[in-house]
Structure formats: structure tokens, C-alpha cells
Image 1 (cartoon, rainbow, N blue to C red):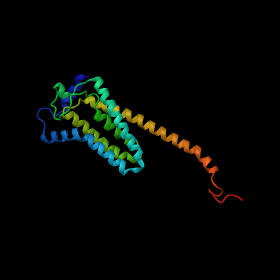
Image 2 (cartoon, rainbow, N blue to C red):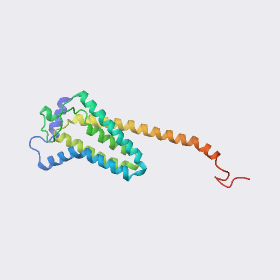
Image 3 (cartoon, one colour):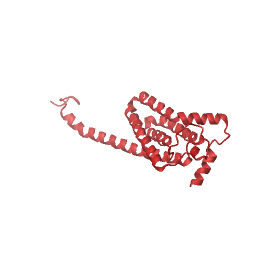
Image 4 (cartoon, rainbow, N blue to C red):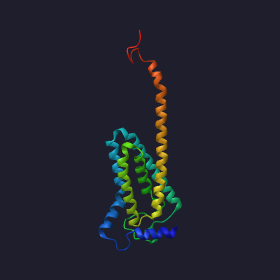
Length: 199
């Protein structure tokens, strides 16, 4: 598996003589992809007021997912490709663990979670494309092995599934609670509230 991972890296990474425009694009997306994702999420929280609570919950969970990803990466301790000398490092970065990619886990979590909600699906697809571009860029500039990106995507999908299950269970509980309270409310309304009533 390690040999396949290294071969994929050599195929996808910029190498020692990259095209200038590709390298510029890769560096910009690798550095700013996460920031652009956060900016779109902030915009959605203001523009989609009916979904604001859901979006804020996604953002809060993404912070927790980032912490977990970094803890897992520190525990596994796989060095980045540029640290191992397997690819040039075109972006300044610390030499911390890289498996899984925190960028991939967080960005794909956000994208998948928004895709799961009908009113946010288009934004989710947009962020999904941004997540794919960022994943490619971080391999291209020597920050991650392809396996680290794959692990990050899987972790993001797992977090998203848990998040959506919890949210839907919460909605069902609220709906059931409202349904049980409704008859009690009707009993205390004055006569004629649902029609003229009978005299």
C-alpha cells in the first residue's frame, strides 16, 4: 500500500519542474481553500436565515472534527511528503502529522452535511467542488499523500453521517413533542376558536 501511495503521489505532485500557472493555482488553492470554504459558510448563515441554526451547528461540529483530525494525525505520525523528501514543498507548512488531512475531513464534512439538506444542496455541491480542488492542490504542492486525503474524505463522510442522523432524530423528537402538545392546547382555547361552536 505504501508503494502505491508513493506512486500516486509522484503522478499527482508538481515535481521539480511544474508549469508556472498550475503551480500558482495549486499554491493559492492549497493555502486559501479552507478560508474560502469558511467564507461561503458564513455567507450562507446570513443569506439562508431559515437554515441558520443548522449551518451554525455544521460550523461548530466542523471545529470539533478539525480537532479530532489533528489528534488522529498526531497519533499516527505519518510525515508529510516534503518532509520525507518525496516531493518538493511549495507551501510553507509545519512538519506535523498528515494522516488524515484535516482540510479534507473538515471541508468534505461541511459539503456532505449541506448536501443532506434540500435547501442547502446547491451550496453543498459548490463546497464539494472546492473541497476536491483543495484536496488536489494539497497533494500537488507536496503537503499530503493521496491516502491522507482519502482518509480525510472518509472521516468527513463518517462525521457527516453521524451529524445528519443526530439532526434528524432531534427534528423527530421536536415534531413528536409538538404533536402531543397540540390537543392540550386546543382544549384550553375558547369556544369558537376553530369555528362557531355549538350553543
